[in-house]
Length: 499
Image (cartoon, rainbow, N blue to C red; front, side, top):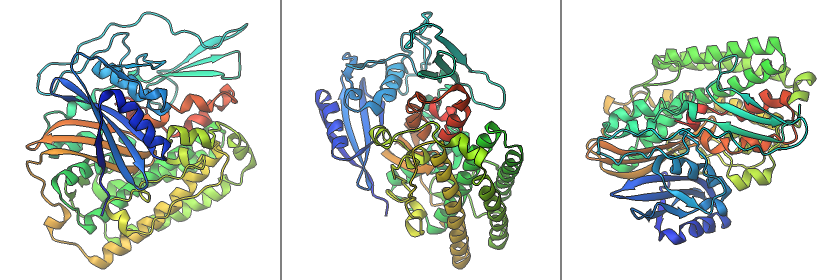
């Protein structure tokens, strides 16, 4: 059985100290969220500790307008505090940074309370240029984005440089903000999964699993093993597709034309297999509250043959690429993220594992059918650079194929259940719960509150949002031509950063 969170409540003046105490005792800071609590605002901190999730909460009274900044003791909370300031107008007192994050406004555009019928007002645009952090002769700022050549999401990088080195980097992610959180409110719980799948398109399956897991915990519904296995099959195909995309971007940046073409082809074949299995190249429509929409559209024999062919061709090309000196030289020593920094910020996914911070919630906080499979915690001994993160992804691709074979064998031996076993009903659910999943980018969290089958509050937290704060830290020892490799090695989805 999945271990569900333990919740603690504390007065607002002790909140940051209590959260910091958990972190000092070995917990990984996983997120800080705000929600309406009547006229007040509830703050919820999530911490991963010893295979379970701990929730620390407080309530900021109406009119207070501020709370003691958690980031003074837990630096990983800084981006969360900036988002809360943008969306709820609360000031984290003591923070050295509350500049806009998801809204480009100098004054926050505060979200309306649930059920008010109001729309989010426009804030006042800030006409003031950003303050330079690097000074000296010949120093200038490059505004890289939000529109770039190629197929990239909208983000602006502000690079302060004397010419080649990148001593300071800032990001503007608000171009991608779509107001997804507020769109969840008042939806039927069954319809919420459609929006969850679109929070971060490259991790549609992981988001759907995390969202549905929260509803299932709220309703006390346990998904059948067969349905859980189908979820794993689609989640692991999603992982392979994402990791191949990172390799494609690395190959393109390194000028490896053959590798670029080959891995692009492999990714396309994976996406076509996903479409054959469920009708969507992104695995949408598979995961539903209570289970899955139905079995795979292909037989176990057909799926087994397809993934066997894919694995063989991907493995052959990977071996060639990972023994190409001109490719490895571009990744080795590039974008180094120290293990202590990864621990300090609670880094997630391949980014964390490439720096020796081993945390994969498929294992450390196992959920669904992963509880019944042979998944092992991946251990990579690397230097925290782009090459280490590439090796993590290569090993995770191998592990994903092993898991998929296990899933297919298990499904084949069990046979198809009745239609009710594919999807167990969830009706008129009320309550509040947290769900999670390990996306290709790392841990996805969903805080879900529902009332009589209607969504009151849904807060998705992608791994990309959490990891994006680490992106500028990886640059001080690198130059402009390393940018593409560091960006590809982080594997971030900007839609997930500013949903």
